[in-house]
Image (cartoon, rainbow, N blue to C red; front, side, top):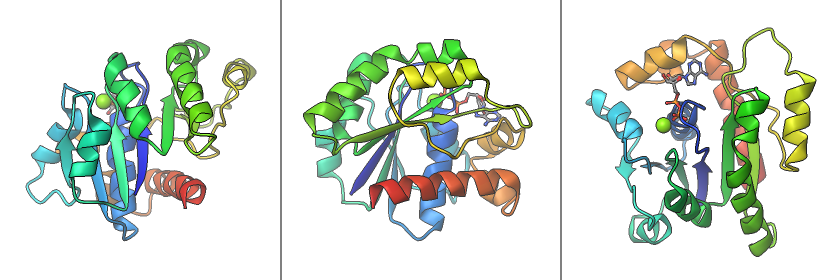
Length: 209
Ligand code: ADP
Ligand code: MG
């Protein structure tokens, strides 16, 4: 079982968008997937509930027992955890359960600096697990046609965590799909958003398998 936790204490960084899309992309690639909603606000559960024939199974575990609870569920090939904002105990529990912590961050130094506490916890865990747990930033909500500035690159480099090559761009299609419990794969299967989500999935898979 490969557990990917999408974490960032900042709301609006794109966690739920990335978690729902990553889970769907993995499922479409033929994997057995579970999406865990660890946010007490239940956005991923809301997303799933809108659609009666939602193909991605979603469970809510918004208590700091994620690791233990996952052991009691049927084993899946992949588990994607949608992180909670500002809940240190939930984040700590998701980090402990994770094989990979994915930190989506908007390309602004302020947003990157706001991840300092999380990065600290993640680095401790990497050390405890002798590098078995991995982590990386993914640039989220990047404006198309804009280069990531040197301030952002410098802010990311300070943390000494890898930054994925794939990025998620700011696109109207993402909030549109959220409202219908679907993903970009339903609305524009060959479009640029589907391509970038698949690239993200493949980059993560290459690191995990
Ligand atoms: P989080 O789970 O970190 O709070 P969300 O994924 O819920 O973040 O995103 C917050 C808001 O921003 C939502 O309305 C979502 O639709 C929108 N959003 C997220 N990612 C993108 C994107 N790549 N392009 C456009 N809108 C986005
Ligand atoms: Mg969310």
